[in-house]
Length: 79
Image (cartoon, rainbow, N blue to C red; front, side, top):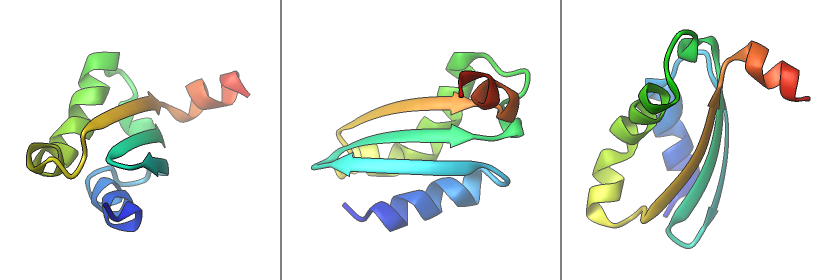
């Protein structure tokens, strides 16, 4: 699995978001911060990510995804 390729895939579908990605084998952990998530439920935020990764999940290239999807304000309040 190519981390840069996955990060680019996420960046292209999530304009204006900061993306941090870590992988271990075929499992990834992603933190996405952006105002794109404003007003969206946790489930809707995750659905955006899964929608972008669906092909790689379906092929088995990615087996598991853990994610945190935050707005800029939410991320600032956690610091």
